[in-house]
Image (cartoon, rainbow, N blue to C red; front, side, top):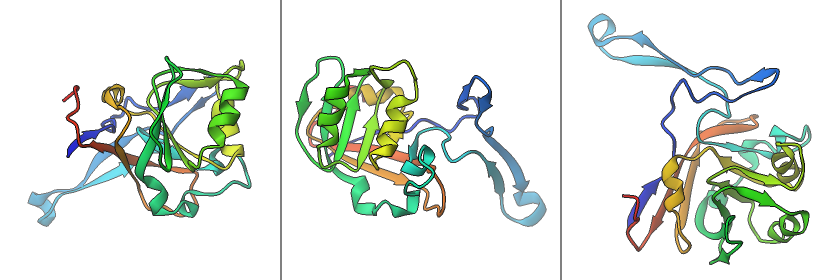
Length: 192
């Protein structure tokens, strides 16, 4: 099997910011050292949507499901692969992988919602044919779907026919979590 880690390195520069809003900064500082107490520990501070992360429906819908409501088995398995540039949909599974960047029409968005995929993964910037840049995120949350986003550049190498493994932190009562996202296939990845 070949493995491709799609996760961005958690870097303090990876903080979402928009007009009038900025996510909590990512901060990693020394808490204890081997020379002082016999072991090293760092203090980690960040937002639930830092770096590569998963959004629960509650990220955009006040009454939406939180992260802990998503079963582990929904995060591991084969995936549908939709190519945003060509419009090709391939393979199948329990996860929908939207490859590349693009805009989805209302009709296409509704068709994709019919797939049996509780988790959607985007490797680029996906929007709805609307002016609001968060419409895709909000509509996905309203449809009770989870969204994994902000993948590393190697995500462009993901092809149909693989299996996705998504591992968020096991948090309770949150609208999301940083996560590790890995794809495995029987074929080697061209980006390795």
